[in-house]
Image 1 (cartoon, helix red, strand yellow):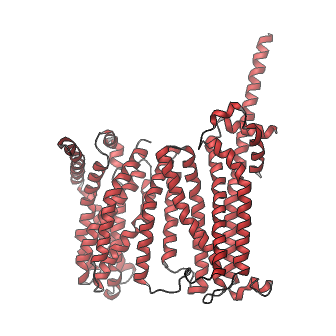
Image 2 (image 1 turned 45 degrees about the vertical axis):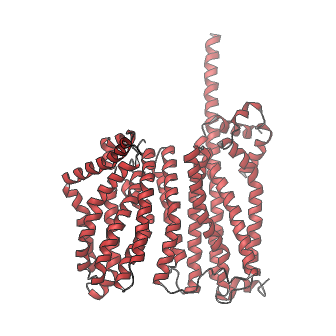
Image 3 (image 1 turned 135 degrees about the vertical axis):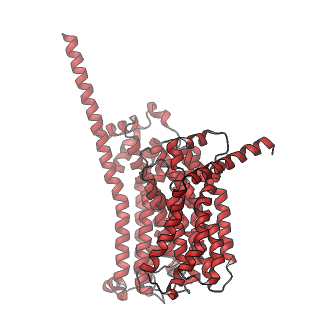
Length: 231
Length: 72
Length: 265
């Protein structure tokens, strides 16, 4: 591959990644809200279910995963929305760069500002929900991989609904069924570790899901944006 | 027939309720899938013929006025 | 019956040379007129095969040793589930054809396929639940197959919701075609992971549909029913597609000529 094209492709990814991270840094309050949401819902669980540690530890992994899913879903809605409204999305569509790369840059920025913080606070939630000690490392590993999958798949949904008013609810309707494998293998990773089983196989499957999402989701999102953003 | 008589077929050793409810719901759904498009097709065709009628009336009226002007 | 009268009116009039240039493969007009000719035969075949299969399965097939007569629900549950699943692929393929070759008619087929598939999924879920009561003692059990069906219903709901969300026909068609394709890639993954999840959490109970142990006398009616459901699906899909054609093309001259010809004759 000749150098100029390589640089051009590169700049599409890095430029949008840098831009979105800068924007996120300027709106720090907004970025914090998924994490706050994540923490708040975890307070509801002992209140709604039971404060007993013996029962909480059984549902801890699943609950943390479901909350991570909801928090991602809440934030992925805005992935393309502000770009659509201020016109920079249209600029992205007409640049000669390969469209999936800027999208991948944006998704990476989204994961760095939601998935990663959620992963980092998850041990705290595990503590609050009395997750057994064997579960912490698998929880962090699976969340790191899994939230990346969630961001990638969510990007397709966000691209499909970007020009709709009240697209948020529709987005969750479209994307939630696609999230089910991630939830299954994410919780399985943690629960296998808690049960003393080998937790690497489900984590490996999660890795495979991540690889497939990285390859396919930006393409699908690019196709979707070409259809929806022009309408 | 596998069953001795008609009553046995309906009853199916107590499982008749389940089997026949399933059959009824399935057939009703399938019937709906066929009837619903037919009903709305009828409406659409009616709408088209109304449109045609309206246009014909308009054309007729236009012709009448133009004839009237010519005779004057 | 509308299609019969259409068939009659479509007979000699569509041979007239002024309409010749419309003859192109996949044009909505061609599909509408031709499918009007197929429909009576297809409907008759579907009716006959379904009636045969139903009577055979419900009244003549022997009962299952373990489940007794409740097993007869298989003759509607499995074909419905089968078609629900294939229906999603048919929808996605139609969408893909629309995206690649920009054929108008394939988007209409795609839109028509969504509600049919969703209702068949509902039928599969309903009959599965009713079947569960005598077999497992509960209407709802988180069985792998039933859970996959439920997710399939959600996938259908997503495509339909997206279809209705857009005012522009073009955007609605293309967006839901993309979603259907994404769903198609996901369905095998979802099914595999649900299977895996099920074996992890529950010991194998009685499987509703244990195909290998099925006797030939039980299997033949099932095969007939599956064929019957396919025929029925074709009829329903054609009917819904024709409807969609009329809705989108009602301002065109060929629809007007069709209606005038019918009113005149």
